[in-house]
Length: 302
Image (cartoon, rainbow, N blue to C red; front, side, top):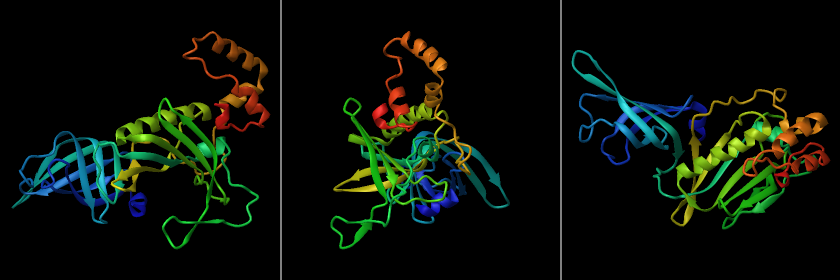
C-alpha cells in the first residue's frame, strides 16, 4: 500500500463486484477523489454490458493491490476509432475507496478507524515526551521478537450510547518533521459497515474542526476489518479539500481559548449560549479547566 500512497495512481483491471468476468483495463487516480478511466479495445468484456449507474467496483492493480470503490458512479465516456479497432471508455468516480490485500463488500466488518492530523496534533498539543531516554520494546503476541513502543495513550473516552471508544496516542519519540506522529483511533464496540465507519469519522472530524477553528487534515487513514478469525487493515481514500501544512507557523489557534482569555467576550458568548435550548447549548465548564491547564485542551474538558 505504501507505493500506492506515493504514486496516487495505478494501472490495473477493474470490474463491477457482481460481474467478476467483466474486467476492463484502466488506471485509477486519487489526486482529488477516487477516479477510474476504463478502456477496452473492441467489444466489452464478459457479457458485453458496460458498467453504469451506482455500483461497487473492484480492481487489481499491477502491484497486486486490491481496490474497492464504494458508492461509485459509472457512465460511458465515448468511443475512439482507428483503422481497425475501436476503444471504448468508461468513467467511474466514487465517494471513497479502500486499498488493501483483499477486496471488501458493504457488510459489517470494520472494528476501528485510525488516523493522524497535523492541525489536531498542534492545537491539542499531542507532542512527544521530551523526557524520553530510549525506546522501550514489547514482546509481540505469538511472535519470537519484540516490537518498539512508539506511542503512549494520553486520553480515552467511551460513548456507550453511540457504542464507540475514542482514544488519542502521543509519540514517545520526538521528530523535527511536520508529519503528524500522534495517532487517533475510533473503536466500534460492535462491527459496522465501511459506510457507517466513514459517517462516524466525518462527524468526529466536524467536532474537531469546531474545536480547532478550521477543517482538519487527515493523514494515513486506515480501517481495521474483521476477517474470519483475524484482522486486516485497508487504506481509506475520500475527497479531502484540506491541504497538508508545509510548516508549523500557519496553524489556526483554538477559538475557545481566545474567547476564554477575553473576559468581556467570554461574558457575551456565555449569555448567548445560556439563552439557547439545552439541546444546542455548548458545554461551558471546559473554559475554567482549559485555562487552569495553561490552554491545553483535554478529553476530560469535553
